[in-house]
Amino acid sequence: MTTSHAEGTGNGWFIALGIVLVLTGMVAVAFPFVATLSVELFVGSFILVAGLFTLFHAFAEKEWGGFAWQLAIGILYSLGGIGFLALPIGGAIALTVFLGVVFLTEGIARMVMAFRIRPERAWGWVLASGGVSLMLGVLILAGIGNGASLAFIGLLVGINLIFAGASFTALGFEGTRSPAAHPA
Image 1 (cartoon, one colour):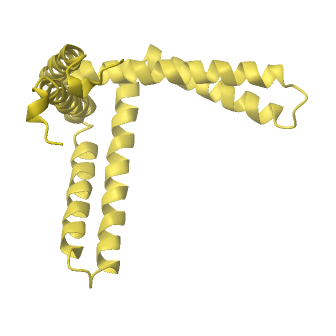
Image 2 (tube, rainbow, N blue to C red):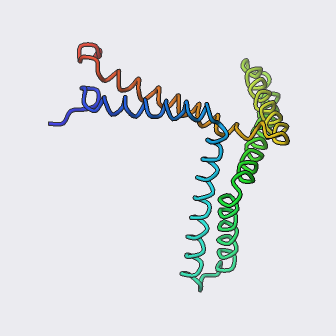
């Protein structure tokens, strides 16, 4: 007979994972630029691996009609990954610009959507949400010149880790209650 998490097994692992995630998140928030560089190196590594596998596939399937395009994509990915790894600050700038453009574009799209759904009661909330995204995008892009925005990705990762850790810790403590504490 196996027992489930709700019956009290494995709670310590949930709590341990939560604590590790919260502490890691706190370090990322305390050192957001280092966290940004870590994310950038992680992304660069994956882009390089994707490029190498794409190149391998291109040569493994040379007779395929898309060989030249597959080869070009593999080279592009590989060079991009190498660029991210060789120039981490440049990669961090590229990721930050991308994030700023995404927020900016999302904000504009959401604001347009708000006016399109204007008879709806909550259209103002959609408009406000779009305004916040637009403002974040502008702030990120404006802060790139002086380097202020480069820590933004690391800050977001840190906040995410803290909330993820808190949720796992709560799950772990919830499972430590007696069965009587769980209403049927």
